[in-house]
Length: 409
Image 1: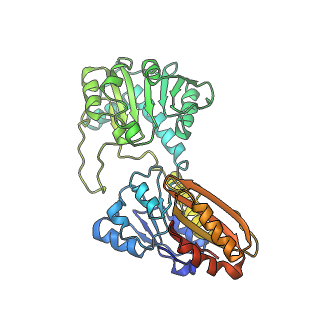
Image 2 (image 1 turned 60 degrees about the vertical axis):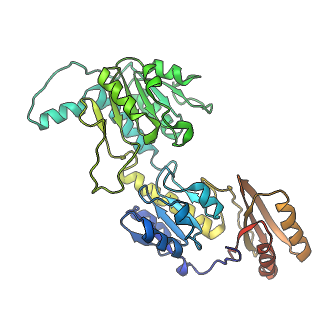
Image 3 (image 1 turned 90 degrees about the horizontal axis):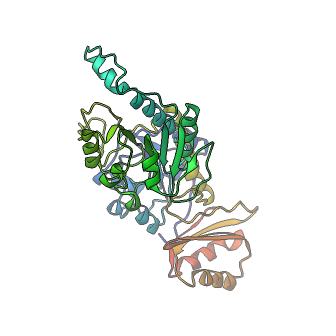
């Protein structure tokens, strides 16, 4: 990695997997790059071969980039996850390899919020069950088990960008809204923040989950939590598949503790649309099952394509890591008539001292400098005099903390 130089845009190898929306390729093209689009998910030896050749990689949800894959990625500069989630990439290993990972945390929030509200209304009127019956030729007109949502309470677990929009949409149809988030959040509309998850469980007629994946949320809704919910209430999960104990959910639906559920994500999901898929929730009367389509709208995919591509372009053109999920966040506006040097290094005591000593020894004039750290990695952007940039880069590359250095321009 040491000593890697930037080079002309036409030589930058960019691979976009899994039918990333055309807006991504259009955004890259407008910036002078020519990405290669690959329609399917890629794994194994084929993925390793492409990673060895790539400078930028774009994936959706089915291409998984793990430690063993990144071992082949000697030229890789950045990864774009064209999605909200980043579970498909080993973020820690990517950071160690000096590879920032970008996603689109906000581009699909409206799509997820609208699907959530649609599922609430569908559960309230048993629409999926009634539709399935009529498809089978059974005319079953009945009001039993069907309700208005007006006046009912929606509990939101995870009051981020999606949770806030859902709350506003729910209020628009007359629902009361409460929420729980471990990080204090100012309420939108008339929503009420409750101090404990248990309080939201007990208050909700409908409970919807919008939390990240990971150890802290693994099976956060298990048999214990479901038992604390109102009998006859409804559970919606459009966040991550391992947030809900799926066996406990099945038992609660069978026993009548829950009247219904809407599930868009699953503990294990197929790698391709051609694979058959079975879930223990299949065949239940008032359960809506969708194949991870929360962000699958034309509008969301277009916005995701633009947002992630712009982040990758910003990094490769200017060194900006704003929005990277695994990397120090650094953004330094361009300084006229300077040369920009990037230093990615191990975050150890004395690193800044050592690099500044090298700068002082060479007599380089520093026009601007910005340093940030994230866990075990530090990232420094410097704008310096062009006449001395090559010499300085060479010296910094030899520092023991150095992971990668680049001159952008």
